[in-house]
Image 1: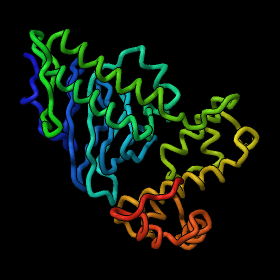
Image 2 (image 1 turned 90 degrees about the horizontal axis):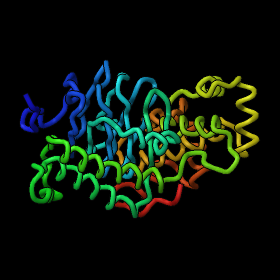
Image 3 (image 1 turned 30 degrees about the vertical axis):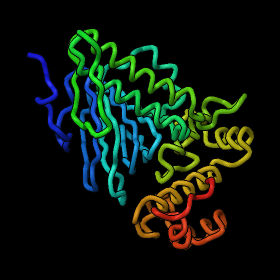
Image 4 (image 1 turned 45 degrees about the horizontal axis):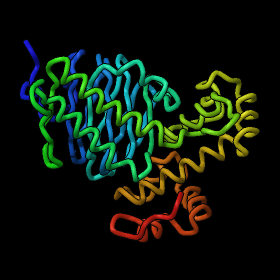
Length: 311
């Protein structure tokens, strides 16, 4: 019996299974604080998410990421995963699609792998946000196509879930998703991308960028890229011009700045969420980096304030 959109839950919730394998399902959600989904056995299909507003927190196995506008996050099947509105964020608006990924997409996604089948592309340049969202709208319209005439035209306000039926609708929907994947992967700076940089060092930078607040150490990062701690620290510093811990501190400070700009978390909670064990140390290094204390930074660059400086 075919699965139809009206047979799926309007909103995924903790404990809800992923759509059955083989389907192409696409939708757009705008969820409020408290929204969480957990799948201890993962899914049988790939999950693609494209964030257009707010912030989401996604995890896959031991990998995790805070996704903001312009992030394409892809979760491969078969690994425990979960996602929801990021702590302290008021909402998370995002497109999502469950399907079987085309093999031709692997080379585009591989440089953005963070481990455990998670791929984090972004944030994409602002100029791409509109075209990528348009591709997701076309994907949803194609999924509703009956195979005769032209595919229906979706509107920005239409938040219904669509399930593709028939090979033509599925292929057309996958073509639109392929456009979104290609646009982001081809035009987003790859963490650590630089001529002559060892692939293992690029992967270590991707691990840091995907979850700056995690308790990374030289030893844990080295293990993640199959190097000894001493060899890893030497290669990292030699090729990138800064030590792994210096790069980690910079990533944590950028993460903290984004949280101050977009959430109402207390400054101490921002420090903890960004991986700083000591609020005093966080205040000191944040002021050194941005020239102002965290509270003053939020007052100037938080929601409704001025545009934040490049960080």
